[in-house]
Image (cartoon, rainbow, N blue to C red; front, side):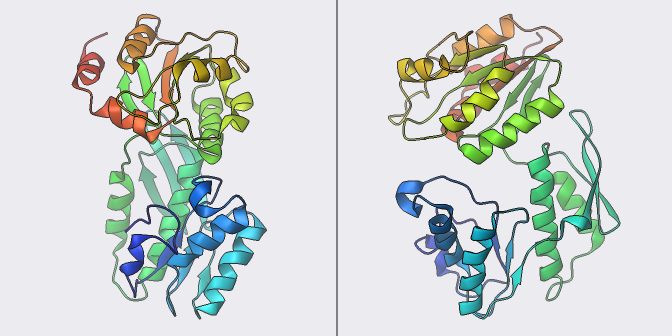
Length: 294
């Protein structure tokens, strides 16, 4: 079960005796609810830790985060586990074949892309090691689970001709991971960005890094959604970081426009909000457009 927001105040706390609690990478998001510092957010997240039950916390985070969560774990007499990054080794990763890697000598494959997904895999495999103390989990099941893992709007390839990718990146950490993905996997391509955001998101600190990677940015509004950032405001913000900005209110029209401008060396990347991603995935007109032979 996933905590929707935070930990202490989340409805998942009805689970009194979980086999293990898991806290993934912590960054700035939902600050009105969780607080304005990493320490505040980490404290709220640590609320999922239950007495005498282990907690696994993703590797590579700020020491301040570990200090807060470790203190909560100690107060609950709970084992505190940080994955060992030396346990995982990347073999290969590309758009066609996915990500192949080794974990403690076991070769695994997943179709999820991006370096951050390798970090997530390390967290998941560490959790499995903890679960193995109480549950028999065969190696074949681990391999099958990794290979079949799929998450909508997480660098999801909607079309390969032209290449259209949908990602729900909407906060500082998400934009950072997306920036690394573009630099690694889309290097040398003409990348058109379609961007829609919520008006209460404050993630423009990453715009100076990600927006220059696009050849053109198309701001859009999230259809039928009161929290969408108005087109004029988003357009003006994007123009502070990019010269080639072409606002189109409707995502459907923006995708049609991007496809018309596409060739074999073009990638279209739709990002900025999970709410935008949901509207695209559930729009039959867009699905029909993507399944046509271009």
